[in-house]
Length: 98
Image 1 (cartoon, rainbow, N blue to C red):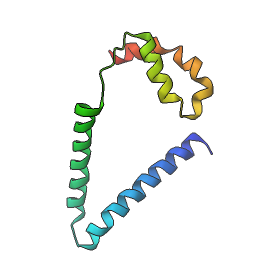
Image 2 (image 1 turned 180 degrees about the vertical axis):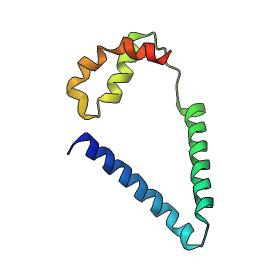
Image 3 (image 1 turned 60 degrees about the vertical axis):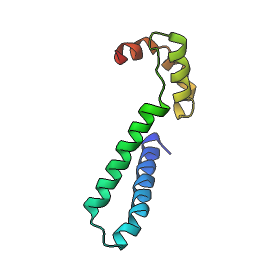
């Protein structure tokens, strides 16, 4: 299966999960715009929690720290076998983050 196919499956799974969560509210005749507003509020709350309680500051000038972060991000993806070449481009990522 290609990466594109994996992405499609991920989106389909996410959409299916959202529908399964919304189902009981739809059965209670709740208007879809109310459900969507609740999903949006949940997303805003989640982003606030992630920003305030989960995320950590990253020193983008620290080459070793950037390599460690990038390697952990790509280590679980299909591109693991190219991670050394990707890590070569840490300076580009650092410039992009500024």
